[in-house]
Length: 408
Image 1 (tube, rainbow, N blue to C red):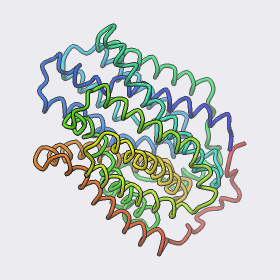
Image 2 (tube, rainbow, N blue to C red):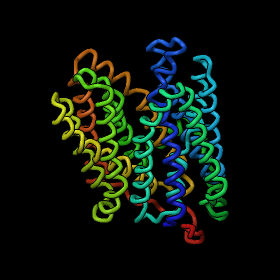
Image 3 (cartoon, rainbow, N blue to C red):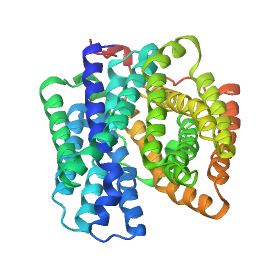
């Protein structure tokens, strides 16, 4: 594992997530200044995830073909342009255009994950992905507080301009300090096995693959359960009588625990236990924690319940990404991780509507109970497909021994 490159990727992901989380909580207020209705605000928030559903696998596939570095530059340039457009927005349609541009080119994370896969040995990969997850979490913890402060000082456009500046810093990092992770020999081998661009048929084929399919199915149902918790928690907390400030503190607490799991505990756990066993353990803990969330009406008990939810969420995200990177051939890693990001984006489109409906119609217990049921299905599925009857290792497809498997 090349620690210098891992550190640069850590910084890139941290800065990228910091810029994203600077403006995310402010979008409803910013759109409100243009007279947007609740429906339009919901569509605006979902437009990024909907565009990323298409863009992430495309960026990942292009990075397999043309290299990680040029596609990272393209993706970050799109993010920079999207934030700049958002800062200058004077109408609602310009806001929509800015979020969709960022979403379509927003393959930063999946391409960064593919880069980590290129420069990490399989035994260290889970730990490396955990560090990237920690960078993601740290950016999300710090960003909302900074964005809120800036909006109070200079209006809603100021955080967008700062986010654009963050993206520009990432462009400089990739341009001057990050070398390509794919060797010419590896890229020649990948070019010999071209893959189609993203389509629904591509997604269907991936879901039907014996090794990849179970992991992507697990990603979707876990993602939908956890996204329901994330997207509806603020409304849940409001009905529980918590202030916006208290809700922010609780979400920061969840974020810190997730960062601890991904940044410090994952590496030790991955050395002692099989990935499938860790995925199963994470699913069991998540199911219990979400059921506890459904039944909790006391803030102090809520804090206890959210601890295992945060820890298991960090564990599942990291181990699923690590397992996916090992379940395909080298020429498929970027595209497969892009599909994983696309599926996760789809859950963020669906979850707010599902969670909001359940909360409004059935009450406080319903979103948590629904999420716990989903995770109960995941536990059964993981046990059957990943633990009891795991799929066989990949057969060799080309002479990988003749290629430098990892760059020094």
